[in-house]
Image: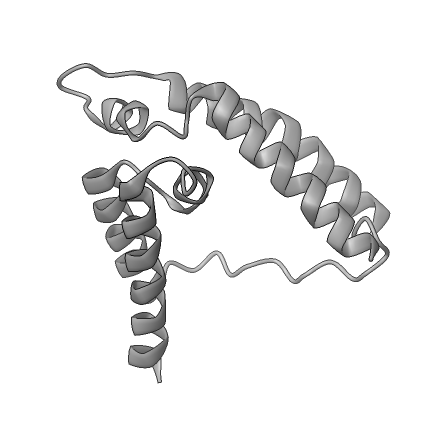
Amino acid sequence: MKRIAFALLAGLLFGLGLAVSGMTDPNKVLNFLDLAGRWDPSLALVMGGALAVTLPGYAWLRRRGCSYDGDALPPAPSPRLDPRLLVGSALFGIGWGIAGYCPGPALANLLHAGEALVFVAAMLAGSQLARVLAR
């Protein structure tokens, strides 16, 4: 139950942060990616703010040696850049640049943006296709 409550709180804070910062608006993202036009640096500032809050939290968890609820911390990811990571990153970036949505803002927009519903459905289909192709 504690894990579910923590997930609920984290999700609420994440969604609130996206909405307050304006990052649920795909135009903000598209303007951030438009370096030669109407560049908007606010996405970089939001990411920097998120890192400023998250990094001390992760450092505290590492010193503690376990997660907030006492579970073992997951192993560190491999620093190796493999083809799967590179292709996946490129596909993510292409989709993000076309739509202006990534998963978090798309989910946050489900209730009031019709294109977000289409995006999330296509995102889930793409995720399932990747699982099928990986077999």
